[in-house]
Length: 216
Image (cartoon, rainbow, N blue to C red):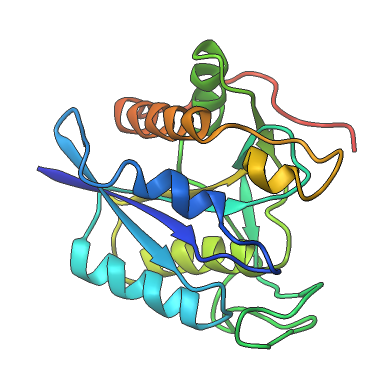
């Protein structure tokens, strides 16, 4: 049986929960076709998060990896297209580090593209009633750091059969209540969305060719 690795983060920036971890852990152990989902939590710490991801890849040898992170202020599940080779932190991570204009991997390219069928995932999420979009930036905090580290590890460990990518998700309603005016999605909706994303990624070899860009 194949393994699907879903990762979420521990809470950060004084939030009591992180929706990424709450959503992925709800899917831990579930079977999707001939694959089983394994959920793991990553630290919101530069360096340590990439090390943890690399260790999981080495141990689990997953067929599919979807890293998930919180993006407070976003209105939809955001399927990320590209990870860039830079850390430029607006705030400190959970270990107090705040790298600025720092290269993630000195031996790596400027960017990696997700190997998920990002547009097919957006299509299927919307069909399932889950707000979704293709995103052109994963930021420059620990989420992008992990996304880049994931794709770099896949390339360096020779895991050609492993597909990987990143999904940003909005606040949970209980978080949005502490940030008046901030959008949110219910945990049930997020869990449904991630299961759809896994199912689509496992079933789709070649992404669909439809418009998914933005003007700005």
